[in-house]
Image 1 (cartoon, rainbow, N blue to C red):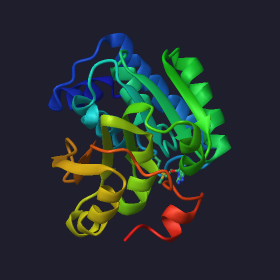
Image 2: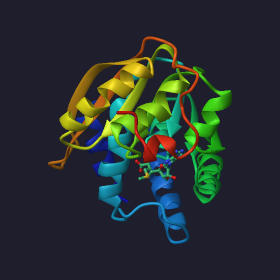
Image 3: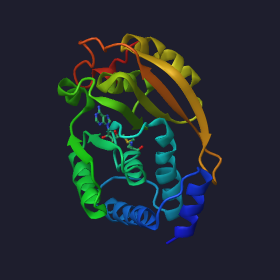
Length: 234
Ligand code: SAM
């Protein structure tokens, strides 16, 4: 079950959890693997790899989320980073958004079986959900969904002024970020910080891009579904 190994990894990122929460992580891993036999959720199937690359990676941004924040996870897929964040942070209210309905059915099963509170799922594309939910969230987060320009158009319309977009990105993002600076500015954001981190017990170096929402996003954004990815703002 590798429970001690998970605890050790969490220690390395300065997170200490009750046994109840550790058990929820272990049950989450079991449900993820169970559903992975039916639908396409993750290519990582080895327990320790799931703990490192999905669970611990997902909770790294926690310190950039203030207490009692209203959070949206865009393109959550198998529930990353949203489910691990919710298990570790009972205070936050989190909405998990994905365009694929099968993943939403799986996420609803996870939420029920782990008995999680203050968590909702939404089956929609980000561009459509933004129509009714402009500037409603304190923090909008996303991992492995799109390039920085496209991602900014997905995330920033949802963020309240003074709130934050957290983009969980891979290595070497300088060029991608430079190309997205104009889009971020048009959409009312400003890059506040780029934090490089290493996933414990690996050589993997990833980045968090923290964008502050300074001004309202102009009404014409996001453009209609598909446009932000086919024609990113340049
Ligand atoms: N965030 C998860 C992770 O890090 O494991 C999933 C990443 S997966 C590569 C990308 C996910 O984003 C998919 O589940 C896909 O359905 C979703 N997605 C892509 N574009 C989207 C959009 N415009 N609106 C909502 N979901 C979207």
